[in-house]
Image 1 (cartoon, rainbow, N blue to C red):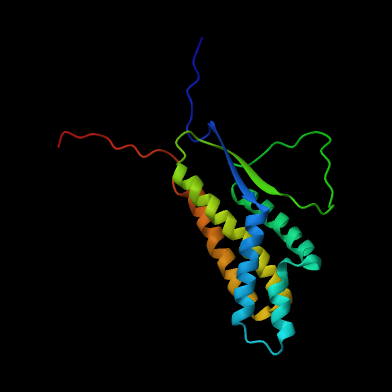
Image 2: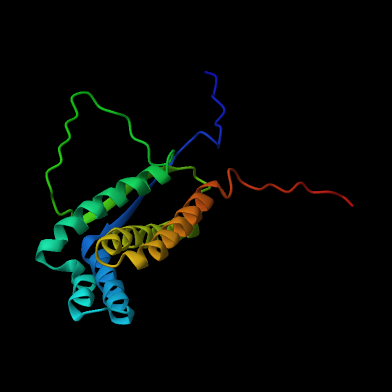
Length: 177
């Protein structure tokens, strides 16, 4: 029997799941929105109130939609580690559901660093929070929207950097000199 040589650039042998609790994401979103509303130069208290109330009953539906969208964007950022095959007769709909835990399933090479996984987890959490805040500020405080979009771009570049930083193990040859 001929043993097939493994290519470390193609073989994905470890399963990694990145999980993000909705409760934790909402906590950070509400905190940032409170600070944003507190420091903003508002004409009326109603304007400030609109910014701060991101997590209230009528507004949470919009937050949920943007959280769902940001999650899918993050999965796409992690391609090819997060790709999944399309299955026959797969159905999809746009019914609003509150997902308690967003989970990204990845297959990574055996040399993939645990520190990179931890960094990705932190960056993706921030991306999702910033994405919701950018959308919310576009509605309630348009002057602040650009700041959050800049943060989104910065964190997405860091995510891409994590995924492209090292394609394979670094091997140093020994030399007698």
